[in-house]
Length: 300
Image (cartoon, helix red, strand yellow):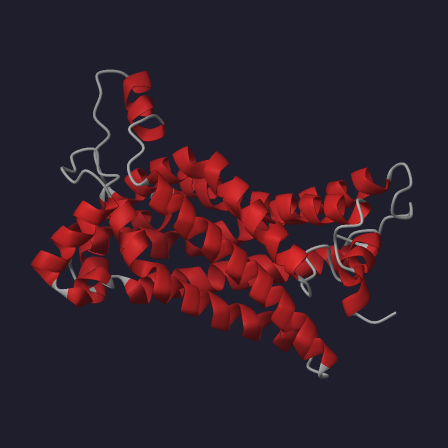
């Protein structure tokens, strides 16, 4: 069998697979929004005020959830596009004879860069309004203020560190996901047989956790720099120097615990839920034959 045939459940090739990717990414974004909010506040250095620990925890994880719709939209289309196009590009490059390393890295680099640049105004605006002291009612108000005070270029302020952290994060996550898929045992039960789905999902859970944690841990420092740039409107070099003067090397892991949860969880959950949805739809005869064949061998 070819390398492609046994690669993963997240196997593009038909519209139903795109629907599965969008569904998995959307569910993961919805569940993990409070965690993302907490990470954004922590990494940006925003003050979560409250008289007690639980009061501050409520500020971090509880309402008001500003910019929910825009944040969920941005997260959903971005993650779905990255994983779908990375998998589709990988399969295409493998079919053309490219090496597995190039087929994994090049599509992931290209699509994650494009997605981050397109999504940057939404990212900047939604992070800005997570500041508990922000007076902006929502995303539109924040973007209008940024445009009025900083011009159009202000909407893309922080793009360089954002791309620098997004591209490695997803390249690493996709590489780990695919590597784990090759290392993990393939399902022994045929599709539709008792135990097949549990075997697929157990393998998917392992690779999803590994991919999410690896991607999040690697890029935490760049998350901190980007969020500080949003808060202060300083340039990349100026922000980095200020952080080093004020905090030393400790800024590299500021908010790391929250980031591991807020980034690793949605990435891992996106992979796992997409695998689950593809396998479910394949078992009901909704998925394409290519997707069904891939699900039969292994669960991206």
